[in-house]
Length: 340
Image 1: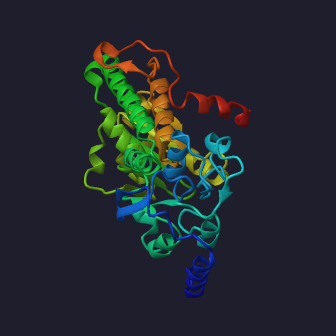
Image 2: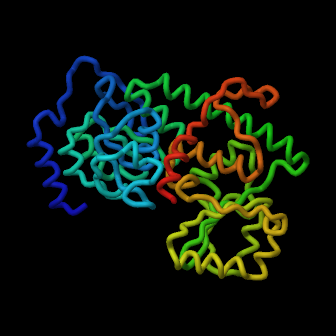
Image 3: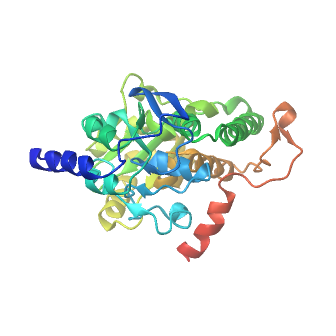
């Protein structure tokens, strides 16, 4: 941010009555990546500065007063549009409009250390600010935001349901695949001029929790690898490949066709065993919250031909006794009209 804009922001904050004041009563402290943050209990007017926080707010039944633009499906992911109808947008995740944030007069800003450490002093002049260490740890985001907003009971239920679904999936896939489980999974994303293969991040952490393992080529590779030559196709070798697609980009589609028509592609184990699955990038890496996580898990049930569990699944014997929709079921219904 230019120096002049920073000074304007500080001046603006100083002119907004009450923007940095809070009732001394009913305050509580929330531990987060920025330390211990004191804020009203519970916070009511919330601005979310990354996708996972926006997803989490909706999951907790919160309507933020401000959100940042989405990475894809701009200005907001389709699965969140109904819940966020009319909500103010405050710029990009990497460069939020701090003047706009200040004018919304929030009593809580949800940020990440990774994205927003540089503007932290300005954010904290506007309102109490809490942050996670990463943008993809959906459990940490959920727990932190629930504590800040007094919605711990709802968060506990969401996490309990998630744990039940994870246990159900692990049981069912192990039973179906037998000695072929666990599988090595590669998550790849085609761009216009290269391919990325991920080892960590949102999808990677969930696959790890579900019991998948990584290809040998990705050990000690940090976030993953960027592949620029078709000669590197063998690096992708795995039992199953999940391809993150952006179908509305013709250049990406051309590059995808180019790489997958190469003779080396046909030699990959996942290709030979018909285990290459095209998946939604929004659900698998962009959404970043508990709703997106459940949608990703729904995809895995579908791709492996497993019966979706009822929400309150009993881990013993993979049985379920209570009939409720999965947390992402209603959002899937809402998307049908948008995609027709």
